[in-house]
Image (cartoon, rainbow, N blue to C red):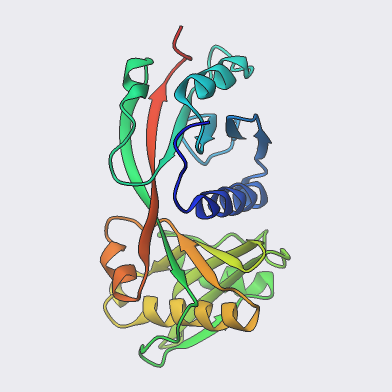
Length: 248
């Protein structure tokens, strides 16, 4: 095993949520290989690579061995996500033939509070027709998945202003008492009007009603300040490494 990871629970809950929501949306598969987990995307239009490996607390040598044992085809590529406690990635992977790509944080909040946000109408999507209504304004921006409406672990909400859907949020609860926000999007013309805050507040409210004690998410660069303002803080980080074939 590698160095003990602070907030390992958050890494495990994130992986469970992330892989399950991708399976629901893109019909991808996930395997636990011991030192790593692998999400296989194949030809799904979700990324430029065919699979993603995730390592939590495993030694780099064990990670490399697990990847080498996985049946990667000659024309397939992958990325490796390695969890760590701070923003500094493990440079051991550079010596093993991997190229560093980026580092992203996993944010979280405990006991999600009620937020002081503008009163904007927010509705839960319970029928495919509602998702299609959202996509009337979002199709060229960030469309809402229609085929997952009614999934027992995934809930989607949209905000409405001036007779149109102006933003939406997607949350999954694949782990008891922990929710993961997979998407939060506001139409460009309606940003800075409290839409994102209203959507986030609704997720907090619904979470508390359903026994959620922690919420996790991966913020974009643009959204980091927004989430920090509402109480979210980094719990750990993942560094992303890429190589076409495992290092020999």
